[in-house]
Image (cartoon, rainbow, N blue to C red):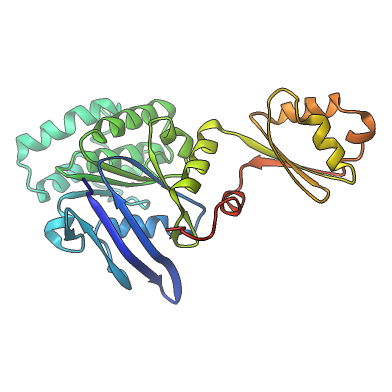
Length: 306
């Protein structure tokens, strides 16, 4: 069953095209939206939540446009910029939000109490946000969103600033909720959501890439694999020398540039030490980092991106 249906959506921010030709169907389960900054992640999430109107196309939830107020009321949405009043008690703000959603005093308490306990906010909930750390404010905003009666969860960077214990509590809760409803998360912490079986939507220059490209990216993020880029005149011979070394994954060779995948940079260093000195001495440039989104796009056929 499809819950969200994004049909041929384009969106602009001023004169800049933010989304283009986006066609996505999102059903129940845990969904990760990721990509580099400016790729359109938050814009897409906002349209799913019914905020704003696309320049072209339509976004539906349950067959009805999300821009309709009756549909928006069924969606719990956490923005990347928290909308907490800094000097009003957190509890008062959360209860007010739940009251506006139609919950009576007893229902508000029943919705908030287990979440306050789960996120260890008992000693903080009656304080104003101005007295809390960024991670504590994030936890309060999460509780206010998760407590809402909703048919879908839409969260923008919910893991930001949380300590390890609260991250684990949130991931457990999102996994539970995703068994019954769509949970869509914008996050740069893809490896954490991948470990929970998230579907991946990888964005690139306002488009949603193919499922194949998203799987490549998600598997890389889950494995926390790295690449090492070497330059020098002996790269072709060096590729042959290190190909069978422990921990070395795929190799890419272009002219005098060699790219090696590995789980740990030290594995490449060990492979270089084991290679003939005449070859390793020819390396005149060395760089390493996480697999670049550009590399994933380069490995994906241009046709059928959507």
